[in-house]
Image (tube, rainbow, N blue to C red; front, side, top):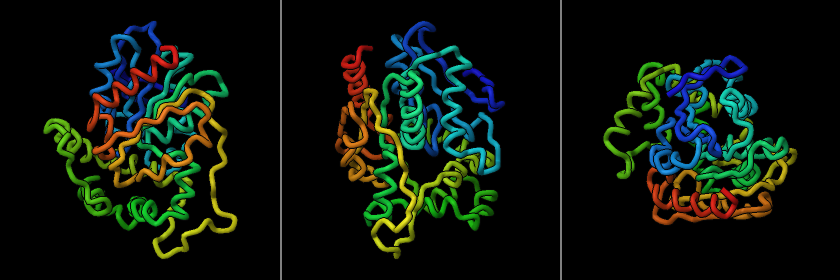
Length: 297
């Protein structure tokens, strides 16, 4: 791990492996994990690629500002480009899962215009335009996302301060251990979740987002004047890997993706839950290998 100071002053703990002159891949983990999300991908790719794997802002040892405004998407996306700058990386492939995938969607949209993000790999992270529309109109997705309202509710803060992140996970998402998670990884996560500043840093990703999650008794329609993200169409090659048994993000999120992504490769992973990078690592690695070969890497 390296400690890297960004131009903004934010400091990130970053795992950097692989040949310095090789094509770069930046891997972005999601909630509530760390760079360890990619423990099966980095060994597979680091002989051919420079793998850059941060603990993102708010997580583990990286900077954990406690104000909500420090976690707005523009700042989180900015961290990625500032990290690349700090490491002398001009162009790169961006890979993201869950919240890391949300930042990768935004980073890809910005990075294609700058000529810096050459390809994109998304794993179980919904496209912002599709996701927000589903939250308005689809009962399954809205019900699955009610936990976001709990994560944003300051009434839960005292519980988090007393018991750590695990308490709100148990309350709002009935967090259970996947059988694919190794004992050591579970122990490491439980230790990470005891850090109260990190707990609020992680929750602030949800609190700073403009995403609207209506109550379940609200009409299932797009309200007049509703927030709907207006985003550019992606033109860079994009691989979307979707675990089809994800309870938080059902497969409705991949319907219509080709309207927003011009060069789309979609891989559906059956019999797999949300944490596809480590629940189905061989499938993920093979899909990335095929995609990289197809796109000239």
